[in-house]
Image (cartoon, rainbow, N blue to C red):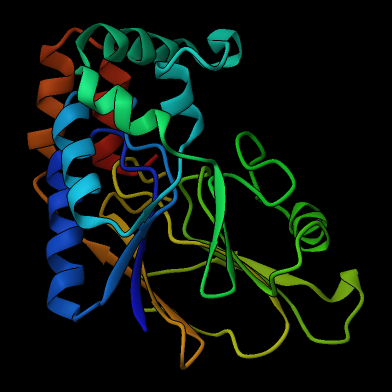
Amino acid sequence: MRVAVITDVHANLPALEAVLEAAEAAGVEETWCLGDVVGYGVEPDACADLVRERCDVCLVGNHDLAVLGALDISSFSEAAAVAVEWTRENVGESTLEFLRTLEPSGEQEGIGLFHASPRDPVWEYVLSREQANAGMDSHPSRIGLIGHSHVALFFNRPEGEETGGTRGGQAGDGALLDLSRGGWLVNPGSVGQPRDGDPRAAWLELDTEAETACFHRVPYEIAMAADPIAAAGLPQRLADRLHIGQ
C-alpha cells in the first residue's frame, strides 16, 4: 500500500492543501497524520476539517494537547505560547471535539506511529543517534514514523549491529530509503512549519509492500499563510520563519 505520511501541519492551510494535492497526484491510497494539526498558524478549523476528511489516521501532538488545555504551556517558547492562547480563543468546538478523540501514538501495517518519539510520544525531539537508539529499543516495531522536530530526517540501525552502528541524517527532496532491513525511525518533516532550511511543505511517500520511503517537498504560496499570521497580531517571527524554513 502506498501511503502519504504528514505531520506538523500547524494550521497552515495553503501548505496542507498543496501537500494533499501532491499526494493525490502521486496515487497514494491512504494518508496518515502524525499530529500537531493546530498551533502557530491561523486556520485551525479549516486544517482540522481537511485532516478529518482526508486522513485515514491522525495522532494528537503537543500543540493540539496544549490547545485542549491538557498540557501546561509554561515550557513553550513565548511565541508558541501566544499562538496556543490565540488558538484557544479562536478555534471551533468541532475542532476541539476532533482533537479530543486522538492519541499521540498508534500502529498501522506493523509500523509504529508517534508524534514525537517511541519512548515519549508527546515531547521528545529525536535529533541524535543516541535518542534514535533509545527510541528503537523502546518499541517492538522495526519501523517507526515520528514527527515533532519539523526536520525531514532518518535513522537506521543495521540488522545485527550494536547501537554504535546507527546512522542518520537529514533527507532532501527525492531522497529514497530502503526500509527492508534493520531498524528505522523516519520523520517526514513538517507540512506547515519546516525547520530544516527548506521552506517548502514536506511529506513522505511510504510503500508498505516494497518497504521504501521517499521524501517530498512541495512549493506553496507562503505569503498566503504568513500574512494572515501577522494580521492576526501573532508574533511576527511566526510569519517570517515560514519564508526561510527555520
